Image (tube, rainbow over all chains, first blue to last red; front, top):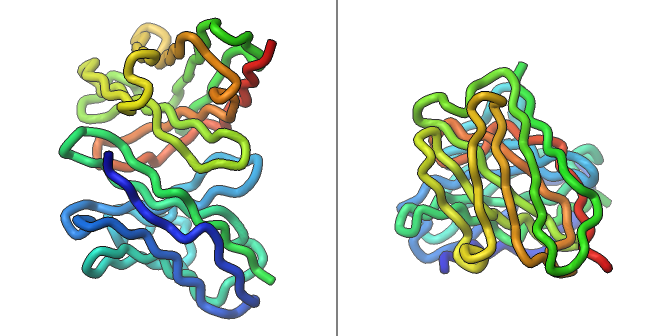
Length: 108
Length: 119
């Protein structure tokens, strides 16, 4: 089955830049989407189709993709950015939805 | 305003069947090109996609649970129903329904419902 690999955790101080990655061998052939998930809340779509920000998502968040890795970048992180971040693709080969294992972002 | 809301039992006994309902308002579950999916999160674990139903009733299931899952639409009530048979404690978690415009991602999510499987 298709696997998206994410680092389990990332910690950094306020004001720094968070780089959250999502890896797969053929990710260049797929559209990657990103969700922010805070405890007790529903996940929120923050990036779709690799690099598109839905309305209402701060410009500090951006998405990109290169080679076998998709990246969610959060500039000038703040306490409110603490959450789990998941990448997701639609595996058209099997017509399945796949989520990465999630990265827990902690703002020190 | 588009909202989704999950409903169903909070406690289910092992071997029983879990039935969850997703009530959708603000858009039709019959809208061409769109669909509704179910995703769950076991305590302390990652999001796991379970099932998806398209506007035309095409269904897709996560491979590991295909034999235990079913998903249906009730267009008269604008609802999507998920059933999971023969539940076990590992099926404990928060279950979310979410809407997709057909572009491969989920724009709208319900708040989730916590289901515990225990005797």
